[in-house]
Length: 77
Image (cartoon, rainbow, N blue to C red):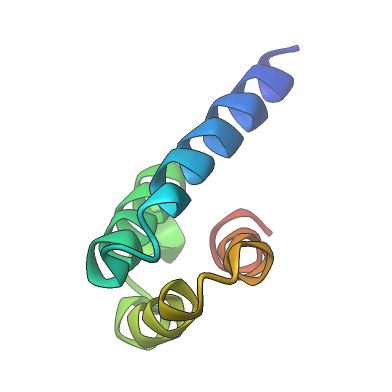
């Protein structure tokens, strides 16, 4: 049950961050990195320089499904 609550909270937070992806893609990319590094500290610093441009491009395209896919691959799996 605790895992389900964490997943729901993370999904809600992602949706809130992604609402601003078109208006402010730089902020969206930074917030995604901060959320990911807060969730998984071990992977947080490894790919920040690599992940930021990827998240930024996806935020500029407003491609929410691809952003979520990259987020889960980078920080959850």
